[in-house]
Image (cartoon, rainbow, N blue to C red; front, top):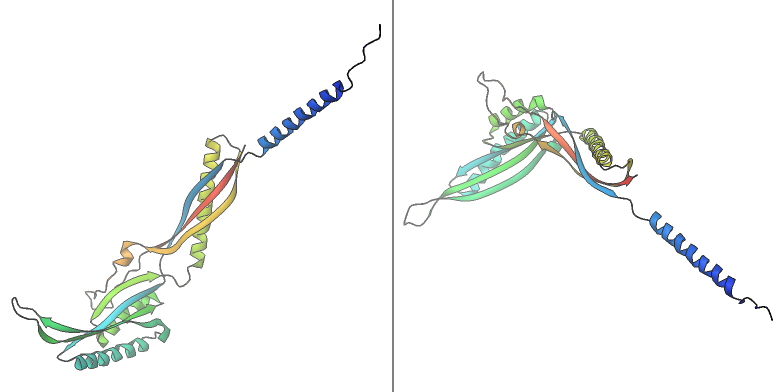
Length: 245
């Protein structure tokens, strides 16, 4: 009896099948390795507080006269005295800025009658930047004596806020990292890695005491007491952290 010969392609087929299986395992392992890491999207802020070292105050002169020309002439004369007084107080020209000039007709109103022209009102307002806060009260008193009859508002700020803003940035980033570490620990991850960071904010936030500081003569007839209070500079940050097992 003639012995049977093995089929010539049996072993190559088995090797080929094994090769397909290995490729499949390799692809599956690669897919498992490329799964994206879980991420945290968080926000935090840093805040620093400091006393302001400069102030901007808006003052003006308002005049009434029978004609527009007279109202403007009177206003011009009184405002010239105010500007001269500001220079006498040591303010630089760059620290004085005209903020508004207005001229309006004035009427009297009686029921069932047409409005009656009574005259004209002229107004001229300037914003004064005072870089030496102890001088703010005396400057205000001086311009009132020179003819100012309107004090429209006051705001406080910093001559150089860069250092305060940087301190707020450091506090914000520290708070953000603290949040990320807390969440990582609470969810069973070993560490976090910052992958994105963005910033917002940076302007001073006046406290109510600063906004309500008003011109008011002291009982002893001294200079106007003005309190700058305290300002806050806040920086907001948002970041994305990748979690590591």
